[in-house]
Length: 490
Image (cartoon, rainbow, N blue to C red; front, side, top):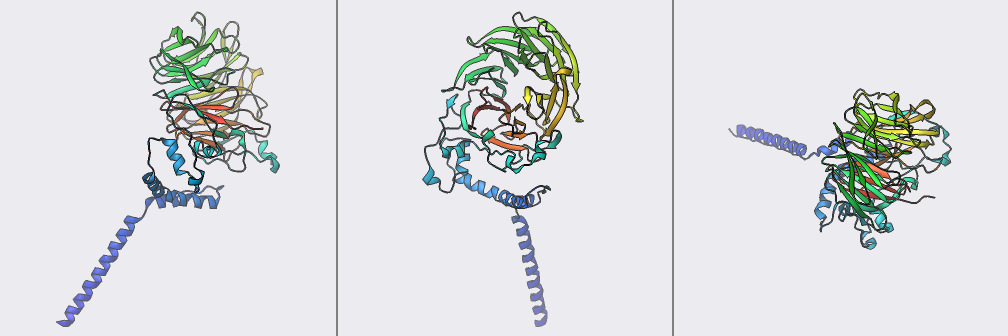
């Protein structure tokens, strides 16, 4: 009997040990952080630096816990997103360096932000930039003229040198009186301080960004989204198109609508003729481009396309109009500057299987890469294309390079960046749905992202440069317009 009891005790103790081991294994499985495995199992590209990848994985693993602790430590005190971002990025010697902070959060419409101190430069705008290393003597990369590449909006900028070409010293001013999505914004012709933007509630706002920034006029008349607008050559008038099927002409000084042109479909894009401002070209959802007489509002001529005309731009002579449609095609249309007669000349079809609307068509009279006029196009699926334009062949387009970004839900626009020097590439700037403003060099197949601006909290829809090319304006999905000040270059 005693032996049986001893054996039963041994069996029970062994069973208890097994149960304890099983419970420990269960607890270990429960305590395993899934984010750790998601970070460790991230794919590594062939051109990635092993040290960078390991550090990135470690930081991603620590991000969740550290973010929670910082949010617990943070006391809002009525401050906004930028203040919190500055807090979590503060240096170790924050207490000794702390100085009166600049009010950079969206608060008051047209508030002017004074020239920032070196400390505030670190916090108000996050900006990395670099350029090709001219001293390395790598001429092969500079001779590359045609390629395509894939990139993500979240690609980290190149960090192979310090180049202030597209670096920014912070926010010049912020306009936040608009409560809906700002769909399009532009600076006035040959103007460095006149800015206007249209919103999805049908309003047009005209501002000045000179010291002190302020709202000049708020133009109300459209009942639906403002899809596009354009300044006249003397900046006295604005012509706007809208989803409410109308085109309106505004006199800026009086803030009045002086003419309404009614259509049968949504009016999607509009441009003044660069030479003859009496001509107004409008593209609509009825697959046609119409030329109106600015003075009378009467139709002069029209031409038809295969899909709705979503964007357009003139060349510098006014003899060519470049149109993008809802299927991703780009058209070259000849236009008579005296009579307004139109004739389609060329069409460039998109290569993708899925047809996506063209959100941006922008012409530039000269490019260092093409040694002549060029055209930039952007589609809603994230395709950026760079064409050389043959003016002697009625605007025939030749694809020079392209860049594929992540697909977008919103109609995000892009723009050429200023030409700075012969050593630079072909730079463009674009908004993104991750609330950042990205700068890309189209002449680089790898690490094409050269800079990034952080300040918006919502998807960035539009971007525009002023005439002096020292200010960049960006607008987002919830009505915030930020004017960034570019650092001076020699």
